Every structure is written in structure tokens, then in C-alpha cells.
Length: 326
Ligand code: HEC
Ligand SMILES: [Cu+2]
Image 1 (cartoon, rainbow, N blue to C red):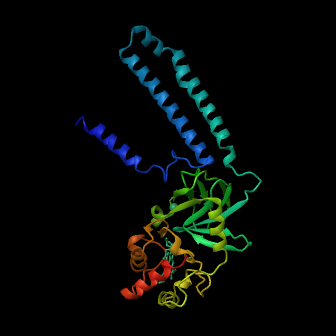
Image 2: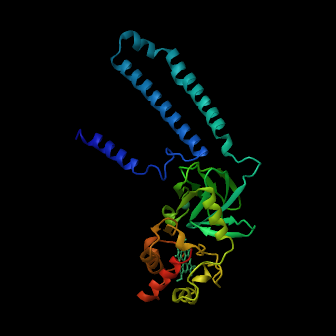
Image 3: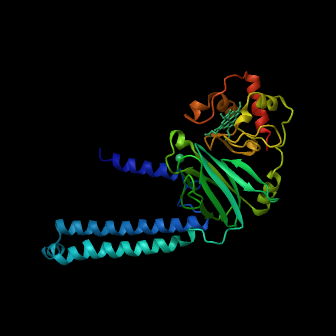
């Protein structure tokens, strides 16, 4: 019996260390996340100090000398420990927290770069303003330049979602009918995982996303190649024809083809994404085929119907076509 508790605690520690770096508020990769991490450590240290004081008082109350037990019983001890100490500590912490977080509330001066992100049940619509002023759509993966302040304008079309990428910043709700702005800056290149942090129904737990922070020049090149350009590759292929014929374009857009649906994610560059269906599945040909035929068992309740009309060959052709869209 006695060894179980320590082993259990040790094991959960190991499990927790497994989620380090990519999605951790304690592994900050930006100013805003650093402030959140600092506040977390201060709160953690403060809570540990309070716990120590309470334990010490408890030991004294049980086994201390008559003098210390008398002191603990006194009205002064109650006034000090029960009223003055918590009131002062909590007021100081609140003031410090508000001061620390003041820059998180975006100022009137907009950042040079703005990306619109809309929460949908159960994926993320991402819209960039291209360099020529023409906007273009992406989904489920947000690319940003390193070292630049960025305003993420967060909206929702259906229910409340919450945008949270712990390594880059605090979370901010996406509320229907409102635009909330979250200012972020990634300090180093990398891939940071985020997760919808407000229960939004059905497959909410499978509504994640990735932020890919890139060196400035790479980002600019990526932005230029995406803006308004027709999707590369695949036109005239068997998979492309199947895509149009099966009606995928009623919900999905592929730039430069008749497919212009806006219900589901824009697929113009699906081949360049690391994951499918809001970071649910790695983006491989097999998984694309699986998502088309059995998406409801992979991401139960999602808004894409299953298509069981294709032969193996046709599925492969579709997957090849989608992989080529970059
Ligand atoms: C009724 C609308 C609808 C139709 C028709 C439809 N889809 Fe989808 N599709 C969606 C929605 C909504 C999602 C997002 C699912 C999620 O992640 O919650 C999606 C997701 C996807 C994804 C993953 C996209 C990403 O960004 O990760 C692929 C690939 C895809 N669909 C392919 C197809 C193909 C191929 C067809 C035609 C055979 C098709 N879809 C038909 C609505 C549709
Ligand atoms: Cu959610």
C-alpha cells in the first residue's frame, strides 16, 4: 500500500513531462507567454510558502511547547493569519497580475501584421491579407514570422470557442458577434500546438491547431506564393476530376478551380499542412483516404459526411490530388 502513492505521483510527473515544449505554458516562446509563465511560477512559489507556513503551524499546534500553542490560539494569531495576511497577499497578487498582463490587452495601435482566425465547429478558418491586399484563406495551421508583433483577430461563427496556444500566449475566447484581438510575438522559429479551450460541443477535444513560426524571409515568400494564386498541381488529373464530380467543392474551395465552397476548410494548400481535420490526424495519403470514407469514426460528429462511393483506386487518386495542392 505505502509505495503506491509515491509511485503514482512519480508516474503522473513523468506523464506531465511528456507534454513539455510544444504545448506548455511553462515553455514560453514569446513575450506574452513569458509573462504568463512568470506569473505561474510566482503563484506556485507563493502557494508553496503558504503551505509550508500552515504545515509548520499544524506541527506546533499538535506537538509544540505550551508557549507556542498558546500563541497560536491567541486572537492576534487569528487576526494576523486569518485576515491581514490573506487580504494583503491577495491584494498584492491581484495588483501584480493586472500590471503584468496590461500589455496583453492590445493597444489602439494595430500591429503591422494581422491574421483573422475564426472558430468553426470544429476547425479553424484562417485568413491572411496577401501582400497585394487580396486576402486568402487557410485552415488549421497558422504561419507567422518570428520576431514581429502580430494581431490575431479572433471570431466565431457558431458557438463560443477559445484560442489557446500556451507556448505563445494566454487564451482568449472567440465569441459570436465579436472580434477579440490577441497580440502575440514568437521569439524563435518552431511549431507550437494550440487547442480550443472552451467546450464547443461534440468533437471539441479534436479541435487543435498548429502555429508554425518561420524566419521573416521564409514567411514573406510563403505569403507571396499563397496570395490569390491558383492552387498548384493536380489540375486535369483523375483525382481533380473526382473531386469536382463528387461535389467536394460544395463545401471546400480550391483556388483556380470551380470548387469555391466555404462550409469546410479551404484546401488550396492542403498538401502543405502537417495535419488533417484540426490536428487530428497526420497528413498522409492513407489518412486522407480514411478521413473521406470514415471521418465520423475518426472525428465523431464533425460536419463532413462520409463518402463511401469511391473505389480504392479512386480514393488513391483523390489523396494524390490533395497531396499535390501546395
Ligand atoms: C457538407 C460539406 C462537405 C463536403 C461535401 C465535403 N467536405 Fe470535406 N470537410 C468538411 C468539413 C466541415 C471539414 C472539417 C472537419 C473538421 O475538422 O471538423 C472537412 C474536412 C476535410 C478535409 C481535412 C481538411 C483540413 O484542413 O484538415 C479533407 C482533406 C476533406 N474534407 C476532403 C473532402 C473531400 C475529398 C470531399 C469530397 C469527396 C469532401 N471533403 C466533401 C465538409 C465537407
Ligand atoms: Cu472547443
